[in-house]
Image (tube, rainbow, N blue to C red; front, side, top):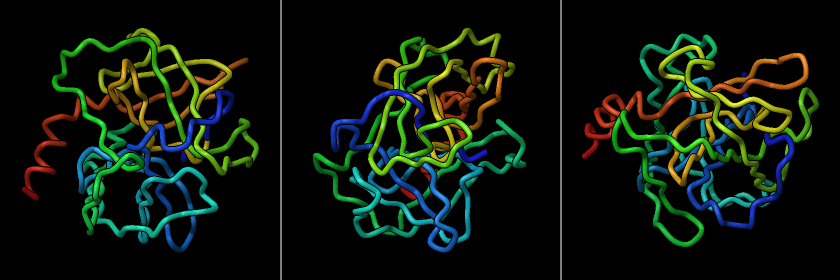
Length: 216
């Protein structure tokens, strides 16, 4: 389930300063995430491991900065089923200093906010479907959001095509109109393409605010 970017292009170094590289210290299993405050990263709940570290300001994963330890807060209703409340907040044990290479991205404000159909997803994951080809550098690809009734649930957004996220991209943001609207969760093989599903962030705003408020 822990889905890299197939297709697309290499991101301009540090042009996505909110992007976070997440990796387990022992297994080295990777995921993506994004910085939403000086001390919180958002990602997918299925990325939870015992020894998670986050790396900020990353372009090339072969040249990682010093990692930061975190406390993990997966959604309490997550059961490891595809798309099932697959959202997690990571509280950084050391708050970050914001700069050109490390910066936050602002979440949607309300559930009723209109979402642009023109979206983008990014990550360091596999560059081919079903073939272990992780990218050392951040890649991104443009995608078109499908109508909500196709996605199957009110807390899910989806895209379909022959390009998009793959393994290693889980937890990264689906950015629509410069706003992070989804979290990469999983994909489904169709006959000639892939249907990718994302957790709809605005659906979880009360939960997000409750977790973060506990540390103010």
